[in-house]
Image (cartoon, rainbow, N blue to C red; front, side, top):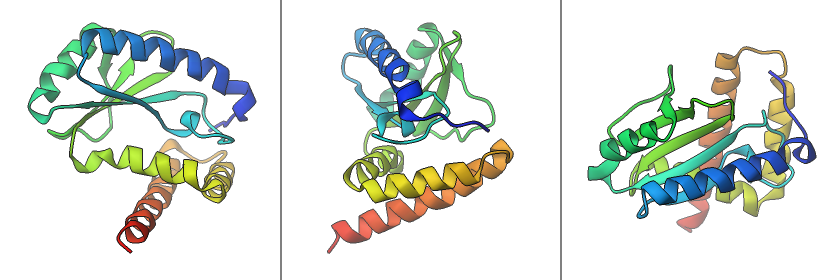
Length: 163
């Protein structure tokens, strides 16, 4: 696994986000579209990919997934799929993934995690250290390690907001 410094990947990622946000808005005008993932975080190391949160009404999720598929995306293999979450990836050469999320579901945690790291630069430093420690490990091991970190950040963020 290889990670890039922000100066190397963020300009391209921002261009992809801007392009895809416009295309998604044209097809799904009521969707909430936000840049998430490491490429949305100042000073974060990244694999150089873009993750886009697409929040939709729960009863419209499947219809929205079909619309986005027609836009050039396919369902990601080997990822979580529920009635409230569908992960899609671009069929083009662009390294872009969509997290199609039912509004009000637990999967809005993508935004909670992003916002926590944006608000706390020390968490970005910890996230970067985790990534550097994962250079050379399998994708499965990286996901497992990252999942523990994300879960901890989300739990701490919820605890702090309930005080």
